[in-house]
Length: 77
Image (cartoon, rainbow, N blue to C red):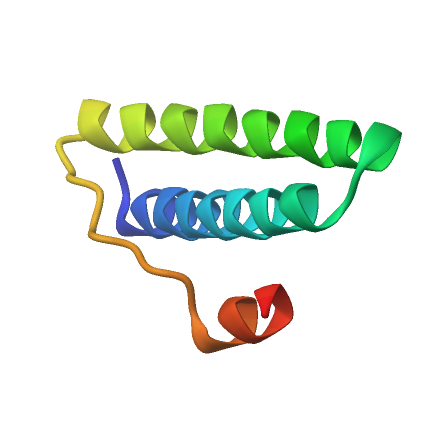
């Protein structure tokens, strides 16, 4: 797999993890149908992140440790 493809996989993995983090915070902050929507989006983002991790492992890579960036933490706050 090319470096460009690996970079794309890592970028997409990072973005899905960040989306899951934000959806989780929105789910907790909301109630009713809106919370349900964010719960669903959170689950979908977790599933997508797992897919990108699998693709990365299949290509011989390992997923780096992740923590939300400053922007995501501020938005979640």
